[in-house]
Image 1: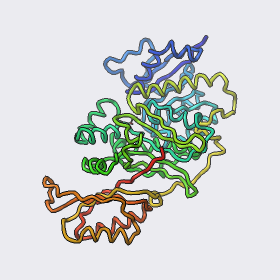
Image 2: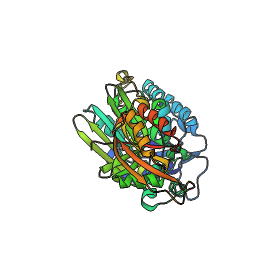
Image 3: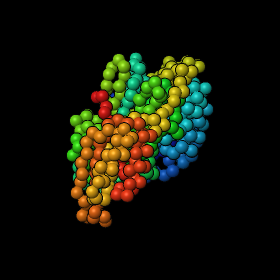
Length: 440
Ligand code: HSE
């Protein structure tokens, strides 16, 4: 029986990890598939020390893999959104099926890529693009296909979660932990993608489109990272009964779709608040199934390879029954004609509760002024704590006032923060972290 030939473009952490899993589990995969998968062509600029690929054909020209008549499935594991985009379009136009782990590419150019794939009757699979080894794309597209999805929320950046966990549990400095995550192969080539929430926004954009049957709209995602979170915020949140996690949240209501990634206070007892280190977790609420939770390693060579190779097997299985011009399992889970443009709510229209950390001069009347402004804006206070001056800081007279509010629209909170910062006794730079109650 003819094997199915795989071309791998990119032999970095994920590329070499995927090659390794394909080789190591060859026999088990053949038992599942009834066919052999054979890596026949690899594009890499140069093999790194210790990398071995047997007698596979090697090139430094990835386009030659996209044009190789012997390659059935091309694995795009190069990353980036420019060359990788051209490469995938070239592969598609040459009739190749594509598997990619590239969330930035799918979030940015997915609409065009899926259109080209459909026109050429090939599959583009991207399970590894979101939450590493957790098969969350399959969950949304297939496992929960009976449901109307109401909302989803997830810890979908392993590096960010690793940093927050280490800062919380071992009081380690941010920069140190980030460096470690880079060494372990978790972080993006540009680590600002991890710490500024961009990587999570890519992933949430994909999950939201799959959940609600819309085209991909990365440009409308509200994106905030963890770089402004201090060890004090983690400690104060802890005292109030919360963990701070970087969450991607998307929900649908009559007003539209909420699409936002930002640090979030979650009650300590919530299951997702206990997800630590590089682990990812995604909660999905469907009208029939209720709340479901998916947990696993969100980054790293082998967990990501697990998703890449599962996609290869999936594509190989579907090759047999593909017919011309028939969309079998649509790329975004809904028939292309049935995708619906739905308003994505600007962050100012989002309603949530808030944690505020306000640095103030320790003067008589300052708390009264703060509560008056909140009252005038109809912002209700849930809890308040005052912290002694930090003697190690520069301003010996400053104290921190921590306020937890009830739910209020973001636009009103913005107005109140501007008014608070205009008070003489309030130092500029009020920290605001949104609070979420997840119906686990
Ligand atoms: N940099 C990403 C993360 C890798 O830390 O989650 C997996 O997408």
